[in-house]
Length: 91
Image 1 (cartoon, rainbow, N blue to C red):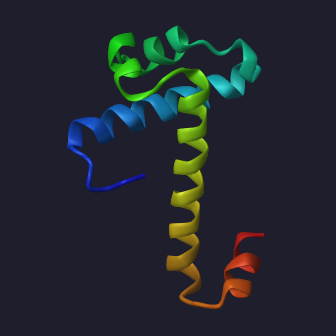
Image 2: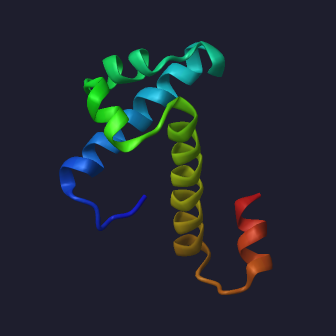
């Protein structure tokens, strides 16, 4: 996730992502609604739609955020510039 974002936006994104991941443990992806995500995250729907076109746009954002966070953690832990070393660390 972009750490240069306004703190309020970061907190909103974090709350939405955590809500989505929590709901994903309980329901299938197609059963999770924007209402459910917002309700659990305590974020208003207009705020959600200010940042995301729809549920699928948000899901893409979640996947990219999780991927970036994972790669950042791996890079810190492996301390290597070797792509193959990073690949093995992710496995």
